[in-house]
Image 1: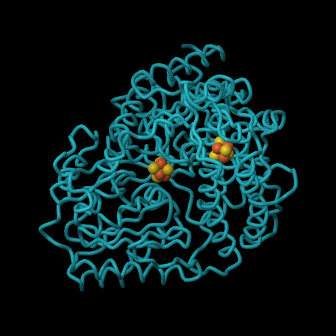
Image 2: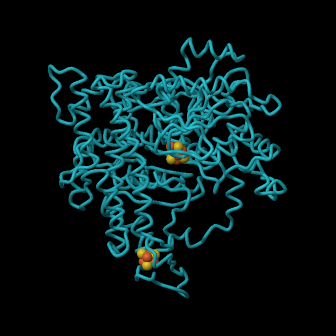
Image 3: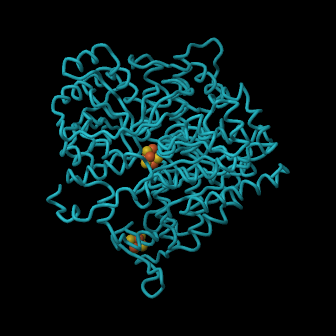
Length: 637
Ligand code: SF4
Ligand code: MSK
């Protein structure tokens, strides 16, 4: 790897300027000392990045291309087929939404599969843990629950939800009909964006963007909105609800975050990716006497499982498993030299971890038929033999402990306490059983508003800087912050998910947090759990008797990078949320598309995008929007 890029080591990164998270700079420096290349190094080698790509004006949707539009008008203004910059930018964005929605919905399909197999008694290593929630979901879907067993109800829930993926009629998706606020579904129906089935909308994205189909930017973007709704209120919603039924609805749980959660004297296993189906099993089986004994026989004091990214969030929220870091920290976990195995499912797994692992002793174990990485050990996960698969994988990790190279081990000491597990149900419980105290606090101005902050980290910007500064600026202004994904790990490592962080909040939010014993930033889960934010918004809009766009609420993806984040941002906007983006989306090559996203969308669905890389300026603007909404509702400002 080093031989491949002999130059990079001479140009060391200014590690301390790359991140705000403690311990990360030391590990970047260690990686350079060990001659290991990281995402930051590879990002620098990509410079200058293609300006056509950044503006979204390149197209390779057919073999008359690739084509690109000159943004300054001195070169080509149309592709070979005649597509304009507006068409190309809108088509590219639609394909991003399609990929993001596909990732979430396909994740959901896997959960539905295991849920159905469990309800039928076929997958014996799983059980339906939250049967109350099963009944609530079944009722919402119009399924009879009286006098029926949970297995029977579960099978019917699975039957209904399976149709939400791929049916061919024009009826809206069942989950959307069941859970989205009625005012929203009416607006979506009128605008022609009520989704019919997740796979169908995604498929139609691909059809529309094929050469010679939809050339109208507005029409393309409307379908993007439709597809994103099929994700947020459909695919992601199904993934969250069924994961809760299978593994339990999260409740507040204390744990720790940052790479210091790795243990020098234990077998360290990282679970990384997005799905709780295997990772929950890894945690469970690792705690078994059999595996702990095996670890001791191999010279370790035991087994330490830690999470990474959203699989990490899943097992943190439900089981209190410590989280080692967010997306850009996956390579650094290996650089500690103390990780015996990194077990991955899918999404946000850098293929480069295999190269990094080669410089240490870490085994990278892929488990999903749809996510292979060259050089990794592949052990395919089979839900029918879940415990056996988990045992097999954990054994590999344990047996690898003896291969640890002690001179290469360095675990930064940094860890941070946190409280996670704030599902909507947990928030309501923390409030004493109803949303009323929160509504009252919003009404009297003790809390000015609520923001959902989500999304990735990105080497284009200082790691975790925008995430943490934006959150700090908003809690200071008495805005309650909830969120998911890599954002939640970033602010947890910054200490904002401790009840003591209430001291950083404005007087109103501080009082509320102290009364309830909650942090000012609430961890709501993984990427698919952005659906929980939608449900929270829906509950708030019901309680206040207004539609979501009228709520003193906003959304943000400060350091986003993935296509899933594009889908999430779009369904936030579609749900009526003013949505901030901290990294610039590839749309600036079309004024028309930019205008639709940042202005016109509001007239159609009530929400719009706002782009601002500076978190302090963004916080001011977001706060201003929240205050405007308060004024319109007649609430004190
Ligand atoms: Fe070029 Fe049109 Fe083909 Fe795109 S679809 S590559 S713009 S000819
Ligand atoms: S893991 S999609 S980098 S949030 Fe959900 Fe983080 Fe973004 Fe992946």
